[in-house]
Length: 33
Image (cartoon, rainbow, N blue to C red; front, top):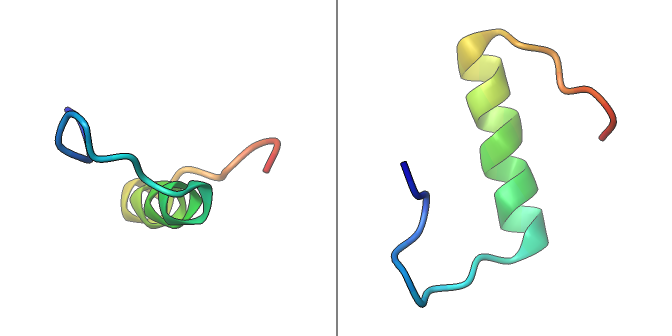
């Protein structure tokens, strides 16, 4: 499932923040960040 609409770039920091929030939601540790 795309996190943003096509043609709407997301900054790296926003992507990392969403990834961290998703990992916390799924209770999965982030590896290599």
